[in-house]
Length: 284
Ligand SMILES: C[S@@+](CC[C@H](N)C(=O)[O-])C[C@H]1O[C@@H](n2cnc3c(N)ncnc32)[C@H](O)[C@@H]1O
Image (cartoon, rainbow, N blue to C red; front, top):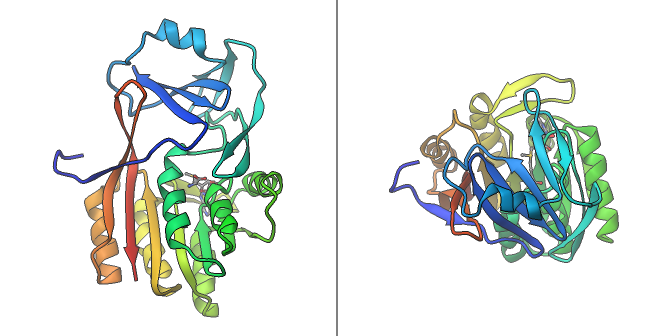
């Protein structure tokens, strides 16, 4: 994170707000529900006092072991609820991994998909989680393939499709890289591929992998299965993979300067800047 590194800011999607952050936590509003969650990037002082956070919030995530934890109820609220975003009805719930089923900074990608993906084009969402980008692409009239290695998350994405009154997304429960490699062998092509791989991942058989070991192969395979002029949208969030490295991997494989290679940030309502990983967008 150098001071000369390019930055892009994601706006809040409708019905979501990053109210404040600081002291290793963030305060967020999802429709009517307000949560407090641990956040390593919030190493600065919060804009509002924690006592005031707790008066507003309904749920606070308390970390127990590793990434797991429990939610403490602070004010009356349901444990699952629906959030309307981009005309979609997404189902949110409190998970043991501190997530609620949506990454709001992805708003920057939803806007990009809405602008640059055209009806009938093919969209591949790798590491697709609960499917927000798959749904945005489907609502645009694209042909959508959604790939994730966790069965429960594919189920969650299907529910999001149904409540959003969309249909015909193709679901693939598989390791993202293996699937992309198979698509390359089959000669299938896409107009836009989005991927948001975790820093450490698990395949369907629980095999462990690290992003820095896989990124080269992932980008190379995406290049192969992109149509000419097709877009790759790559989000990374790994302490072992710097933006400059990702940028150079992409540039070498695409033999083209990425259109965007920047850190992704959001600003809290209280004016604090928070880092949300890196974003690289490149055209074949
Ligand atoms: C950071 S989340 C992606 C969030 C997504 N961009 C969104 O906003 O909805 C990473 C996802 O990758 C999935 N995943 C992890 N390892 C995988 C693998 N090897 N193949 C496919 N999916 C994987 C996880 O199940 C998780 O859903």
